[in-house]
Length: 170
Ligand SMILES: [Zn+2]
Ligand SMILES: [Zn+2]
Image (cartoon, rainbow, N blue to C red; front, top):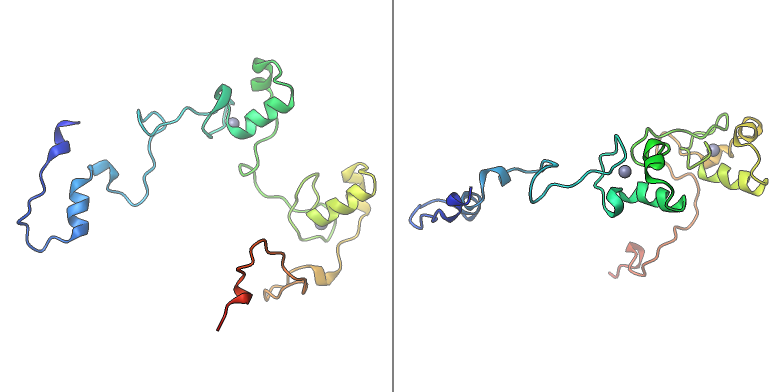
């Protein structure tokens, strides 16, 4: 594989643009728009998380960041026991679900509730979320995005940067 690395570019190839000359210098396996290296690639490969079915790269203790965090939160419990029961799939690896309050059209942010219903539920003392959701009312109709894409509320956006576009000079 290393023998082909020193192929000289032919300086006299008239008409060949810079891109063609650059591509010619790149090994064929890298001449792609999107490079997806094999997991067992000796240079670009990675060791998968030790949790069965998890496709994220494993780092500390051969666990991905999400599973490593869970394991540490459990006080670095028995590793075999953790691997046997690592809990539900990690965020980003499950289908998005909706708020369980009847009529609410926002996505769930935890405990089956959207972020605003979750806030109300927490202020109610965190009862059984299923029971609470069944009796809760949806938000005011104006709170939901309209199909036309109009902003639900005219609240000022919080920006952390003073270089927001509204401050552009003319
Ligand atoms: Zn994992
Ligand atoms: Zn909701």
